[in-house]
Amino acid sequence: MSKRARSANVDIAYEIVGEGTPLVLLHLIFDTREFWWRSGYVDAFRSAGRQLVLIDASGHGESSKPHDKEAYSLSRRADEVVAVLDDLKIETTEVLGYSMGGWTALGLVCYHPDRLRAAAIGGTFPYAQDLQPLRDVIAKGPSAVVEFLRSMANALPPDMAQRVQLNDHSALATSVSEDRPDISEQVASSAVPLLVFAGDKDPRHARCMEFAKKTGSRFLTVPGAHHIQTLLERNIVVREVLSFFDEAGHR
Image (cartoon, rainbow, N blue to C red; front, side):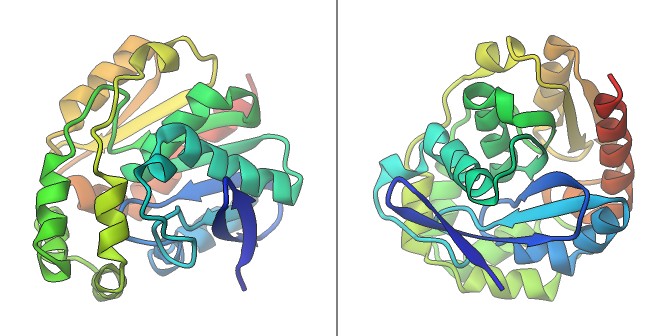
């Protein structure tokens, strides 16, 4: 059963699973926290001694779906996560974020580094990014969004396609109405340990690698994977993320 945290007049739905070291999981755009269950991440991380905090980002799932673009600023996205941590009385946590979720995790690195033990950032980078391709595909409707995601996966899970169809696409359009700013200097100045990962078929791969080198972070290439497929390679991602978090915890 989901709980609610309040952040800037927005309700954020979340659930907590398992016991151990807290780990926040932040999903990609168009999906919900249900992804982590259906793709096996919850079971894999829980069995490794993690207490999982699964969050529906604003505009997604059971969370509020504001139609105000200010609600989707990076600082507000980061504040949503902190509101959940405060609701749970969790002082510090690990975080794994992918794509949009990775962007939110970068926001935590910038605005709330004191709340992070370490961060795994997948499929995104802290440089400026033009979101016009997302605006274009959302304008074409849910079916076009599903096909867009399917083009970046060897096989898009049917349950994921179903969740995408149920989105409030007007809210999603608002969430990408402004391009992402360059926050690379803020991220580089942070002391939060970072793991960066991307598939070698993902057009973002080169910039993700560049970001990792600039910050002296660990970098993981997922071979043969495009953007969505990277996250579907659960065994690789879980193994490397856990190894990184365990090493960061012993520093």
